[in-house]
Length: 471
Image (tube, rainbow, N blue to C red; front, side):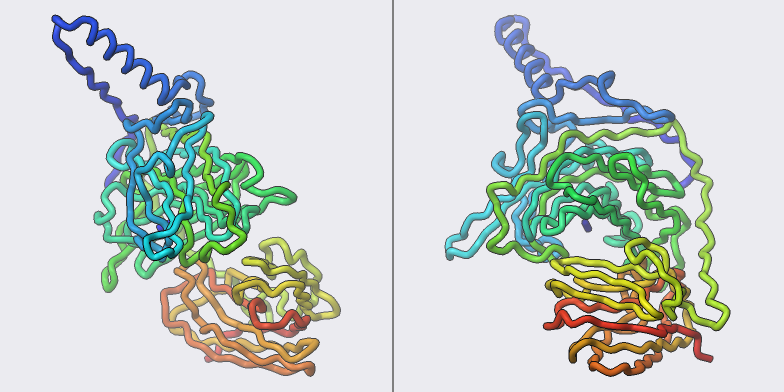
């Protein structure tokens, strides 16, 4: 949300036995019964009942089948409001915010008021730090997310020693699952790393249902040179080319920072820079993040002799255009990830089509942010020190605005061409923008046309889009 060649072996659990005096047999018997009862309450599912995966051994798991949080696995992680991401909630140790019920862990967000009458939020966050830390493995969790603007559930991992490679994001972060409460049909799997901050994010979208309607299984397979993200067994995101560095210094040897022990965290945030704050539509009676189980598996050994893959840069077209199908001569599926992609977020509604050499964007609802309605093309080859020129023609059914930029989705969303607002009229007009790439080489620049939150839903037409190198 926010080392060497080694053979990885399973962790050994230590059972600490209490000792009582022989003279008090009744107390000893009662104590033993209470210990057995507490153990049964915490976890009634044995290792033999947990599904196995070929090539993996079960390292640890929690099925949440008891009546209390298992404190041999989890610790509370209390924090004041605003601790990170400008979030509103206080993370507490209250059983009202964190509890086990009906075979699920429940993290509940609660809305109250403070002494001044201002809205105040509490919620739950737990972690396995210094109890169930591990390096490399397969993490599997089944969960059901809450629905409501401003709610932000997450299953994620951070390193045991955050300072080993440097504070976030240099230390690395693995987000197994995040959703936004106002868009629960979408789930995200992400890794954060590096300095400057970089990230790689996969997106999985359900059709006709949401992650708030039922439980779904989220997992990551973390290996020395690759991470693979799954939802309900479907692979949707693979990453293998991360880095980390301290500003002004060389990069640390690959696969840093993801070659150290990490721990699992579960939380339900309220508000913040990504989901935005709750509004009158957010129902806190149902603001519960339910987790059915968390299971961690590990191979008996891993090959840590891995090398960072070389970056491959997409070749330009024959006429030097770095954008593919920039003249919209070919029909294509704008909902896939090949060439142009049409995306909707944060209340945006609309459609896009290619007709007669034009890209036509029709908006029903403009949404709450500029990227609520957008058309993008990733995988632009951007090289440090080169100068580029963007040109295109555009018009609209009535006077309105849109934003263009060239962004870096895997390099912290920095801009190679800054967000630029332009005025569209009803007549075709040619737009030209020059920019210089001053950052590290990037094989995944992204052309963006953003049409949301501009006070208009007028149809936009675009043609002849080019990005080319300028000598």
